[in-house]
Image 1 (tube, rainbow, N blue to C red):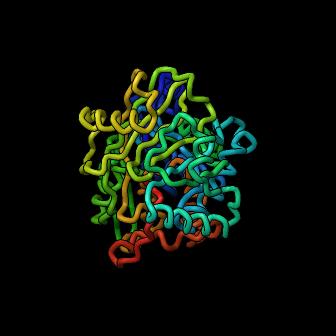
Image 2: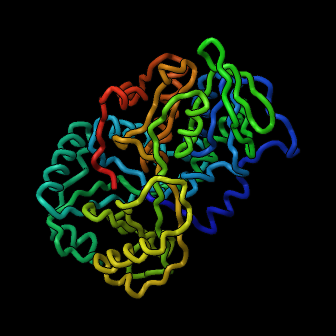
Image 3: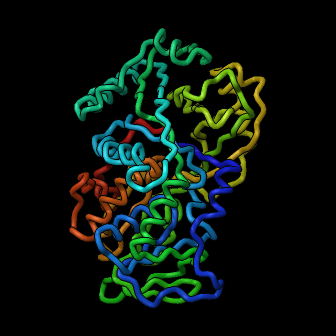
Length: 410
């Protein structure tokens, strides 16, 4: 959830994949699969397809480096605490891979299990989260627990608990590094034969006989029968190229990073005041502090909303009083890719055979990228997913009124 940036992230990005050495080089003339979007989702899809033996894969990213969209601005949160079976199952597959990323990819994901602590302030929230707990326990997550006020105070002594009646805590929830994971997926995909092309903008998709025929770019045309849209908040633009409505809206999210606050330990839980959506967690020696703007309107807005920053500061100081003396070191703005039910689209578009969508994660795409890439490879190559049943996350559910509502999002 949230957004992220830092000097160390920029340093890593300078070593991210770029396109051809020669800036005017053309794209390949053909590809078995074209993946549009080089964030964590596109990189994961490319890797998982390559791992299944697909050789002629081309991933297209319009920016100079991979992961420059919502991935760059992800706060890095990973969690099991969701309210729907499918989201929990996506976490059950993804988080162990993130935890043991070194074993799989030879580099650490930066996984730091500080836990997620949800603070609840009324009976309705308590009832909903206790239902969530029952579902989580039924799926084997018995370490997620209910905390009363005294237990919360012991875990988070610097938090003002006025109005808080209880909460939930998941000890294996925590943080990881989105950029490292994206680059590792891309590196492994490339090692398996995939092409990673940056600074390539998709300008159109040509279809013949109701099938994909080619992807048009600013560097030429790629003939292909299979296109995977992993363009995040920009996915509706790709859908319009083939007259498909993808109900994803871009929503601005912003947060700031403080100067060092030694009073908050580095293992302090990722803390979320659910009613207000205010959250904070350690980031280096300081804190990431943010909040969702429920009055935000859709749009590709990447400038800081200064008025909302002030509102966030008011909530922050009320809930964590020591923040009154903190200084803002930097501010970050990114986009959530929001669907009407806060679940992603993981499916082929029935009205456009050969066109697949892996987008709309509504703030939890990075943490589910291992599972999403895996199930998309199964949908594309086998006709359905088997690792996790995501058949209910098809594009058509919106028009048919089959929403799968995730309520544990802020």
